[in-house]
Length: 287
Image (cartoon, rainbow, N blue to C red; front, side, top):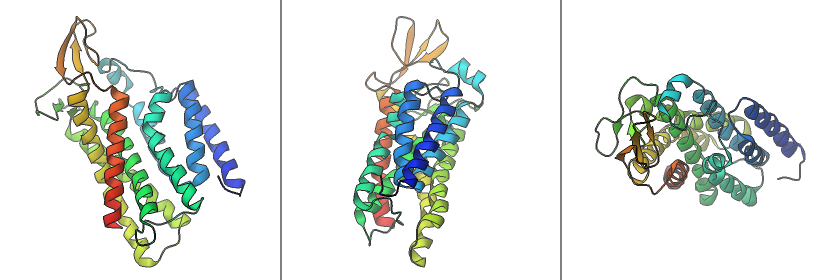
């Protein structure tokens, strides 16, 4: 991605190690590991800070997926040990960001920049979109993985009525707090790496700290958008045979909420897209 061979070589080595490790630990299946390698290599080869945000999302989410697996197995009808994300899930959680990364590379190569709309509105919007993207991804994952472990019964976001655990669109206070914290982790990663990869005037550099509360809001907002889509456009029903909430209608399934328009991957993709756009616009006004 640059005339310098060193950074792409480092990117390929790091991505290979992570993809192999993730496949062995069942965080990714074979197709997910292959696409994950490609996406990780693109991020790190273009800009170390972009790679750091992606890896902050990947590692923290993968760790939380492994927490309380027995409890999750009893609730989740599509439970897979370790998570085992496939290529579709990798694409829905990183495809938009990969496009943004390549666009930034086309505009300015591997040179890192502070968020500063006075210098470049387009670059600020693109980088802001990436921050929103991974804040949403991390927020939604943390919310789902920790929310289901809460002893508090979730409430459907559209009606606030109590629903069974595993219902699409069900939210808890613990889950929403987790989403906010998850978003702030992405912002903190962006800011910390920026100390080493960018050079800005003091006032611009100081303003970068606003990325942390912005990313926290993006994590929370992305999780809420995801829940709203899940409650309305994604089917949830209780199967009397499996004694679990399922995502498809059937003769033994009693509907809880939602329409069979989007599946989980599509819901994630739309929520990420909307959060990416909103955060991108917000960055133009803030920075």
